[in-house]
Length: 205
Ligand SMILES: CC(C)(COP(=O)(O)OP(=O)(O)OC[C@H]1O[C@@H](n2cnc3c(N)ncnc32)[C@H](O)[C@@H]1OP(=O)(O)O)[C@@H](O)C(=O)NCCC(=O)NCCS
Image (cartoon, rainbow, N blue to C red):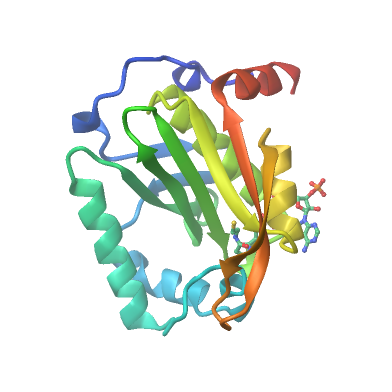
């Protein structure tokens, strides 16, 4: 059962009030990125296992993390706000365990995209699945999106599984579509979930 403030509410989107975002899950909180998150983000993007499935070529150091934080803060202050790059925080310790978010790709058609990176110390605890579900509820409920898309490397089994558990459907296999940081082209999978599929999946959960 979804909390009342995440139920679908079409036509309520107002970019002027979309700051600060704070979404409370059972074990995680998703909140705006702060300047003092840079060291934690440097640890996350400094992990080769995390970068393996991104397009980021580095360097993945504190300077890069500080740039990442500044970019997240600038886009958070933009009007209209189209980029929601957020920190994923463990509720009990307050530790920043990952980053993720939603970007509005098509404002008129209300289409967004989803992404998520977690530090490997926090993998296999269901955090990405929780993050995806909370972010989707935010996208449909608060941002009034109609469809949310995501893309993952075909061999990124964890990401494929997270998306499928969060009600996304595969809609394309894209051969040699993902440019990995090592310069290799990998096959990728396109996913999407629409408001109706999401509402049905939440009812059945
Ligand atoms: C993808 C990622 C976010 C998953 O995070 P996570 O919190 O470990 O995922 P969850 O714990 O929610 O796992 C969800 C499902 O994926 C499965 N899974 C996790 N890691 C897996 C792996 N390496 N191989 C196969 N399945 C895996 C889990 O078994 C789980 O399914 P289950 O609950 O039915 O057992 C994390 O691995 C990560 O940050 N990877 C690097 C960055 C990345 O690839 N981001 C996605 C880019 S699109």
